[in-house]
Amino acid sequence: MSKGDSRLSILAPAESEALLLSLRVAFVAVVAAMPLAVAAALLLARTRFPGKVVVDGLIHLPLVLPPVAVGFLLLTIFGTRAGLGGWLFQTFGIRFVFSWTGAALAAAIITFPFQVRAIRIALEGADRGLDAAAETLGAGWFDRLANITLPLAFPGIVAGVITAFAACLGEFGAIITFVSNIPGETRTLPLAIYTALQTPGGEAEAAKLSLLSILLALMFMVLAEFAQRRMRR
Amino acid sequence: MSVEVELRHSFGAFALDVAFKIERPGVTALFGPSGAGKTSVINAIAGLFRPDEGRIVIDGRVVLDTKTGGFVPARERRAGYVFQDARLFPHMSVENNLRFGWRRAQNPMDEGDIAGVVELLGLTRLRARSTKSLSGGEKGRVALGRALLASPDILLLDEPLAALDAARRNEILPYLERLRDEMKLPMIYVSHAVDEVARLADGIVVLRDGCSIEQGSVFDLLTRLGGDIDPMGAVLDARVESHRTHDGLSVLTFDGGQLIVSRIARAVGRRVRVRVRAEDIMLAREEPRAISANNVLAARVMAIHQDDSPQAEVQLSCGPSRLVARITRASVARLALAPDVAVFAIIKSVIVDSSN
Image (cartoon, rainbow over all chains, first blue to last red; front, side):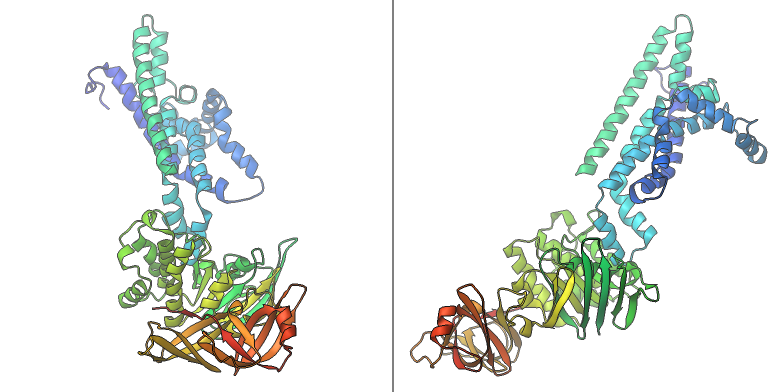
């Protein structure tokens, strides 16, 4: 994204940059986490195994954990001097810290429970009898997942994705702790609001960006509700 | 074309112990009250439920044998299943529902056979519709078609009519009769409704409290006294002998006699199933002379069943065929009925099941 991007004329370049970065981070975070969220939801909704309560708790942990703690945890795992982070950097040149991909990783982890929850509810509400019917008609496990289970859970997946997307746009603590506050790289909308508030006379800018955040969040929540309603039909 | 079923399973307080054999294609009714274990039995045949112990052989193929650990999963059993609630896939059109099993069949039937099934079940005009717009009866027929297009070795029907009102039931029954008469397929039909069983079944397996207690032909079991099946009535395998033009009646013959019925829409020579309910037979010791009933059959008392109720059931033989009459105990005494006494059965009404 070029720094002189001024397509969104009511916004200053730095502001539209923050907005577009936020959208990009949220998009990548949600899309990358979705298959895992579907797998986790399937695990929780369709299987029984010892220690399921623990797995359930771990998946939902980011909901209750301070985001700053999550960011710190990520730093200790994915920092270039940390074990996994160092290995990824040395072997593949992949670096999460101080990078927008790290922001996406942090946002994905924080909003993972939103996705899992919505998909799980859709799966639990689905008629298991249809699965049995498909089985008697010759459909194997993956066939039924791809052609019966997931299409029927689709509205739930959409609702989960939209809710998670909206939540990603608002993520602050984990991002600033893990990947810092770098303009154009990791300074998403909430971080830009925070920065404006730290600058003398920046209240007007903070208010403008806050309003933008509210509008975005509202829009996605309405979309999510719409998807939920379609599911109930 | 045979099916062997033998299974035992413990559900804690409830135990299943069922064994039966089907030698010919046709409809075998799994008959019993709710909670007798009927659905568990067909779920085991379909592979949706794995019993503790058992052996199931469909058409010579062992699909379950707990002694050797043999187990063919449901998706490979080729057991067509028509669920009570149809279970059509709501996100697919009728056409895609119909083709779901066909697409996954090892030897999929050709388009000509598909057209035959579609025609047999009257689905032609439904194919392009969405499943949401179907009536209950239409859903049932699509579910039947979907199961048949998967080329199953056996068809399992779990009370497909139970969720429907009388009008819808009568809409599907003729299709089930056609299926029985035209497809060379063993069918297991779970039901607790005697009239459905009498109309459709060739054989009956009676289940009570998880155990198979009786197996026999529909002709025998529905006239057996003191059994689990009530209300009783005779089922006769008849043939259209002639259509009389002078009085508009049709003559049917069966093993043991002749029946005169209102004109039926079936060609001479065709077989029809005839039912005579126990309530619709009066008995006389002497041949009645001036009587409005068209059908009076000479018969012989085989057995009499009486208990504390004022009613009694009298089993009759009419040639090799069996009839059963429900009369009062007072009448049994007045007529001095006893086994081997010759009587005349005055038949008040005959039900002819006409599949088209």
